[in-house]
Length: 142
Image 1 (cartoon, rainbow, N blue to C red):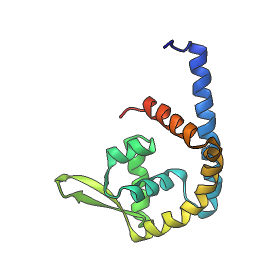
Image 2 (cartoon, rainbow, N blue to C red):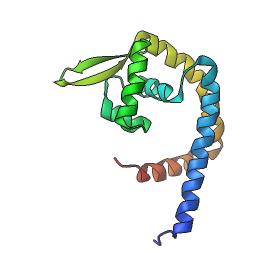
Image 3 (tube, rainbow, N blue to C red):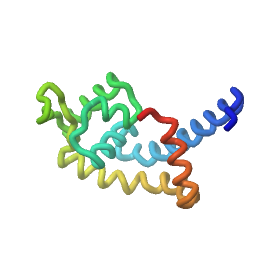
């Protein structure tokens, strides 16, 4: 297997960035009328998949650093979308949970956000989507 040249690597990075930016713009446009920043949507979506997440785990999943996530969570706690509670296995750790208000919000927001996501990746087909998923996952640290 041959490695990519620097220019080929940069071109690939630009394509990935372009696709990401296009998706973010479409999702942000859908979320704007609801007054929900995309980062808050990502927190809600992540917690709806697995509630009771540690801050570090959540930060890694939504691709923000810990200080940024702390500010996001502070706003969401003040808005009653999420709440903090001690980890029952380690009382020194804090976990983040969806509130009932947050559950209601993510259910409504999902319908807004699904269309641009499906429009972007839907045409790939199962085989191409599986291959792309595997390739992208291989680029992310586990």
